[in-house]
Image 1 (spheres, helix red, strand yellow):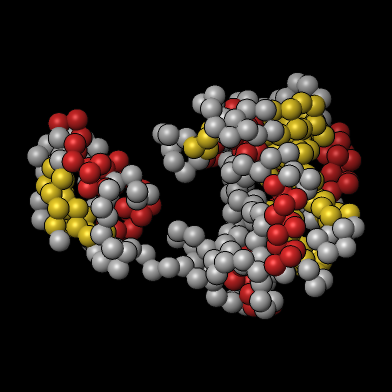
Image 2 (spheres, rainbow, N blue to C red):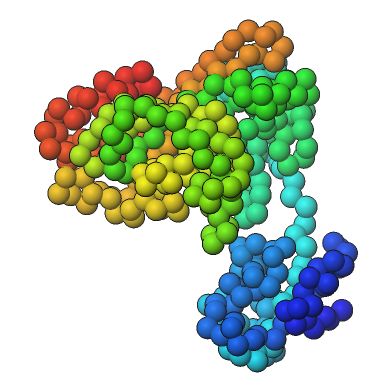
Length: 350
């Protein structure tokens, strides 16, 4: 089935999508105000039900043609070009067991507490079907509760964030832990190194968070609208260019810490998506890129879902972050003094 759409017909066409088991071809004619846009950007705007990542995948699979010829994502659209895209539904994602190293901090019949490594995705999603925390858990544990894609998962950490995460092993534990997160009785403590100097010794950021309309892969706390969010912080160490902070997270919005500090003009070091420098400086030196945000989930506290007993778990600051902040301290004016101050600030987190 081929449907040729002008822009003003798009909304009607979206009301009756093809069945999930069929491929659907959509066709567009580029208008004057589309001229010069990248092909992937153009198609993502025409097809809001598809992410730009999915559009790029279809382009790589040679399912997009411009004037009946296969085109690249970087192609610049010209007025009058006929653009066709064949949309195939992705097969349903499922989680499969994989023998992947996993740092388990605690385990009993009801919960597992894991120290997630930076770079590990928590569960499968677009572009990530293997190598996830869930894949690793399924290799070790049977009959985890929840759906087939996120068994046992009651909260998440971003891919680039390291640290402590709790997983449910039974339906009851899953329900009771989810209730604790919903009612905000779980205590979550993070460490972050920020670009720039925060002057107060402590503070609270209470800015609503919403999806960034310009870059859909990130969130924003600058729009003045969105879901309520609260991030409390206190300074552990303050240098000439950087501030190390301890953070208490009272809500769990997507990218909350990253978006909140970016809104203050103090992005998390290494978080280039939210405005951090790709090549940060310390003293007179350019530092090597960290390769991920300097953000670590250091502690979590909750009531055990079966016994009701209070529990708290710590994930030590990983070597990549310790080594990076040591390089920052060494480059600071009075490096030895800064290094000693950072060591003292991190003592409770090692």
